[in-house]
Length: 226
Ligand code: SAM
Image (tube, rainbow, N blue to C red; front, side, top):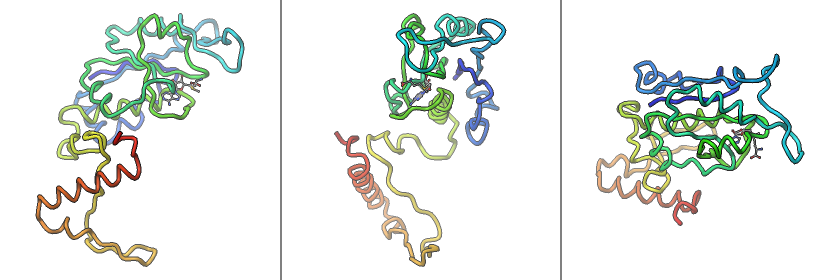
């Protein structure tokens, strides 16, 4: 899988994706990336990439003509995504869909965002990582990339199987426990591991986990049930 990243801050990549499982997968070529610095296509001595918004208002808007030059420098852009707070939410289902793509181009906005015409002219899909506003699309791109990379074949190794994780079945995941079986916390209280998990009875463990998943989802994310 290959990511092309159109950004004003190429130094933000690969960021944390250089570490751990994603980093190892990068080293062995399971995924790759290339940053295109939009600034390289800027105008004038200052390499300006933005201008004031038509209609007035605060802030600056990234120019369509300059972003287009950056985009056209990518040989095979594949699926084109603009990270944007007004985009469709990034869900696990969407991540699965994207992880099946060979090539994705991610446009990271800054300032007030980008001129609408670049999105219209090149059919960018808008994706949001949540209902809050970041100062730039780069952290959102890194999150989208992380979520996709961990689904690539062989990346997670023996770690969690994606099908059992939160959202895959439509529910949140059950709680996890590990050693010690009895733990005294700094607050003086003793916390035990639920007995059923130590019983070795796989059927009982499975149904305990299903019940906890449902209970947690009802409590924390009832919207997922509807
Ligand atoms: N004026 C925009 C608005 O109100 O929708 C916000 C612009 S924001 C300061 C600058 C850039 O950050 C955006 O162009 C987008 O690329 C990125 N961004 C901000 N919040 C995001 C989110 N929740 N998901 C994805 N990208 C986001």
